[in-house]
Length: 203
Image (cartoon, rainbow, N blue to C red; front, side):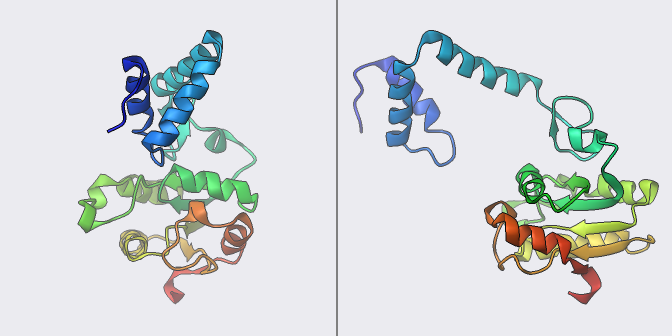
């Protein structure tokens, strides 16, 4: 077990190492870097994190993170509200937006069906999605979920829930490798998979 010259440093290292992908060595490096910064700079970082945690909201329409009741995407009148892209989480919205190939709206499920992890349909925003399809009647629903067994299971479950409605259902092309998460797919491949999406029933 590492020993630290200061309990305050040790506490900072322990907290930073709780972040994903941050081990004790990286946490120590970040802590020592912050010690070299001015108190004002460290206070600005601390304040930004506190403001984010206390002020962040989730869009009441698509469940994306937002500074207000509606996120910037849903509030944008130039977006095509007849296109609805279903994604696993917020990171997928960012990944697709970075391709600049999609101008519709989103629906963030908040996860995918995974019995092994104890995640069922009721833990996701699927019922809200079904209500949106029923009431807002978009012309196309694009399933942009991971190319994994859990992603395919979620695709199939949602398709069964909405197949009675008059809506085109498509899925992103398999330019995304099987087993890959969208956030780790390069922007060109992900952009093409959105553009060259295929009808879900042909999968």
